[in-house]
Image (cartoon, rainbow, N blue to C red; front, side, top):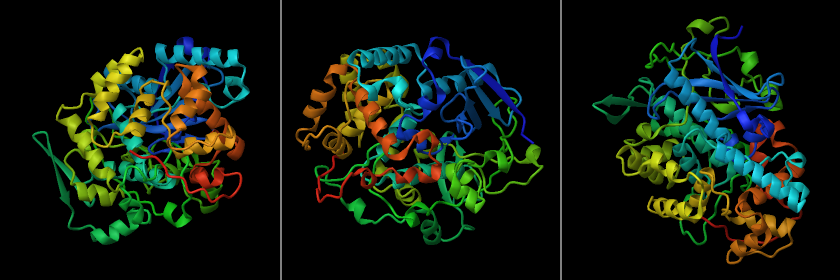
Length: 486
């Protein structure tokens, strides 16, 4: 029996001619990171979204689908409520639109890029010949994009996935009075407290933190440090990947109008990752892959299962946490300080995300330079991270270059690129696609990934960690190139 929910409809308008949900979602490594969960079988996206204000504690679980019988609109099923005020419905639709790049400027960029690909006649870039259509998936908020771009640096891909998942688990713990950490709000302040009833910090940390060698964190020299690209990292062991936090079950009361408490939307069979052989073999449910749903589920109790889902934490939920606790709890390493400073800057009003997004309208070179200068002032936002954030904001003329870019140019274009020459090389190869150099590069790279691994939209979530640099190499080599990090 499926839990009742509210269904919203988002007309695609002019984008209907070019839009396919599967291609729009499965177009970037961000879609693999919690709290996103792509279902390969039903071709739907499941994740929580916040109601109206970015710092509200109220989240709803939504499932986004594009029906074959209604291809000109998206259907957003909102679980746990029968009605929502107009302002909340509008906010949810805006977040979905942002994730899938459905604005007029986004649609214009897609069409111009596809026309450019047709003119140049290169198969790997044409929409009909690749799973990449010109839309690059992103998060519902700029803050989530910025934090995830930080998570991409100086670690392996499986650890990037683990850190994103740990942050989502922490978001739920911050609302749970029985968890090791609870957040008490008083007069707008947030105070971190430790539960004396919880297990020892050491025992909790051993269970919650992936066993990534600490030596990786000591390499903070920017010139010679490693970076994790959007999809490709050196391989990790299964033991590291399976060191995930145990999910807790929390009761929560709604804070928004007539919104009922968030309930488990559907039964275990319905939410299981049906295309994931590992989940089928172990009998584990969908929560294993996404971390969105609680451990416990009592069949036939949909109406009273007031279980909260894990969302990505907001700036307000992170700003006053202890840095050392955040670093250890989510295995963030030096990233904890950068994420906290970002959250604090937003909460204190020094970083205005709305103004940053407004400034990117039109995506002109002058606005790019202005935004890049503003991001440069934020701790931890070096060239690679800035370029990725600005790509998420709609600027495609700069390609974020790292060791994966060097590997790709050497393997696909037979160019002996180095750290010193890679920017010049990408401009030589992709400059003809200006101002969409990144889209041309990413289309080619995505096409290469899928030739190696098959369609990424059909990949079970348990296999995401297989997309590593070591699995990309055609032959074993001894090349020990440095990787770029900022």
